[in-house]
Amino acid sequence: MIRLATACDVASLHGLMLDLAVFEGYSDEFSVSADDLLRLGFRPDREPDFHCVVAEVNGALAGYALTYVIPFTYDLRPSVVLKELFVRPEFRSRGLGSRLFSTVVEQAHVRNARLLRWQVLPSNHSARRFYLRHGGRPDRCWESWVRVLDKP
Image (cartoon, rainbow, N blue to C red; front, side):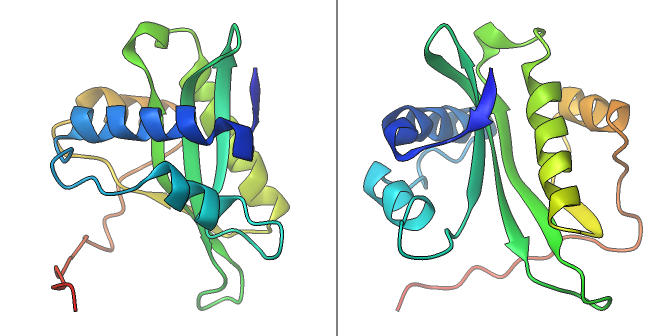
């Protein structure tokens, strides 16, 4: 089942995020806590900093997709950024990733977004094939840049 994440999912979601950090090779730098997720994503008093859908199999979280919204760009329409999409290896090849991605696309349409953006590790060939199958394409107009900022 694909559904919106709730505050009750935070501990399991945090575990999935750590699994992704290990998979992508940045677990030494991973500093998100379950409390951070609760505070930033599940506040009753204001719009959350991120949105999350989860894939649940037999009562356990098997995967998730985490997005955030850039309110507007040049055409005054929002862009949705797919920050993370991850399915635990033992649950892959069951269509969960496709269903998570389709849900993200539906949510972007509801927001009247013009673009859905995401990044893929160059070495993650299966992710590249996955996104190509789902209508994605590399953005040839832009390249990712980064500046690491020291903590104050």
